[in-house]
Length: 188
Image 1: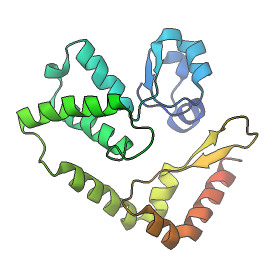
Image 2: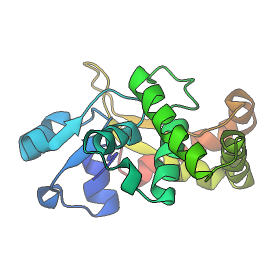
Image 3: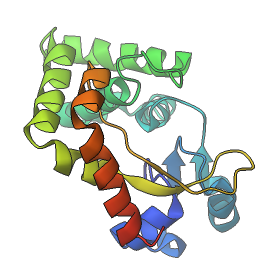
């Protein structure tokens, strides 16, 4: 499994039984002790901006990059770009940047993405969100997060937008309504 967020989301929302999972690669630290307890060394959870970075590093380590399909290369590259918001968020690491360069070199060699792919990608994502903002907000909400020693459970959503401030101002009431509805339906 890759990029699994937290155990409650996997078990309750996706129907995955963690007891049957062989290996996890992730960059989310929620439920890390549970995963380490169940999987031990087979739970690879490291502080990078994108889980695709870990998978790309694994492919490099095992000399498998050349065997990956064009689609796999494009998906790994897009995941790194997406999760780091094109290297603009604080969780971005040098490892993310390095693996994106490795993938971009393959992309250029195989000529499988245009040079302006990143701009097109973020435009398409934003158009999809703006086309149906309420559904986009609802689909991206997750709960069960605790920060530090807080006794509160947090619900978090993340949308990839170039001008998030304007979106929040426009849809502030809808965002609040969706979070409340989500929390009510999840008994939070």
